[in-house]
Amino acid sequence: MTRSRTPWTRPLRALAIAGVALGAALVAPGAAPEPAPIPTSWEFEFDAGPLRLARVEVPGVGVRPYFYLTFTVTNYWSADLLYAPDFYLKTDQGEILRSGEDIPPAVTAEMLERLGNPLISDQISILGNVLEGPENARSGVVIWPATDLDVDEIMVFAANLSGESTIFWTKDRETGQRQRHVLRKTLMLRYETPGDMTNRGGDPLELVEKPRWVMR
Image (cartoon, rainbow, N blue to C red; front, side, top):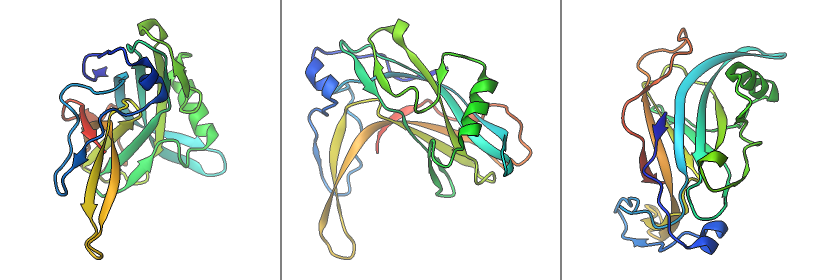
């Protein structure tokens, strides 16, 4: 399993429960914001399982390929935290897919059956409060349609794991007006997928660097 940074706690329970980001900073145009060296808000510990490719029979459609990722979130904060999974998969071809979109219920049911672990929930069922402590950790699976199998790199962005955010300003090239963006601390996992994966089996995709926090 792949683990994010060591759990961090601070007695700001009301802010953690409300999910309020602390100390949102004004970033100069053109500067790339980075997460604070020391967490400034609540944060889940995140353990990612391998990213894999699976082929599933879709009723009335036929066999279709899907990417899927299992994971576990643990709350070491000193209060219950609401967890709402939000995952994006991005390829080096520029395609961006949100987990759960265009996934037939039959595909989710089939993947849960293949995993054979009653403690793993689908993306909707896992939504809810996570109690404090490792004994209350929640495990889930997220799925994306594999619409392009000829890519060299895949990045997965796991959001809603931290309350940290920042304000980022850009300038519109046409109007010259400043635009305000809210970026949130997100965990990025990067995988190498050289060549066409049409005939690839279910072996894990190669994680090419340690998961790291980004502002997105």
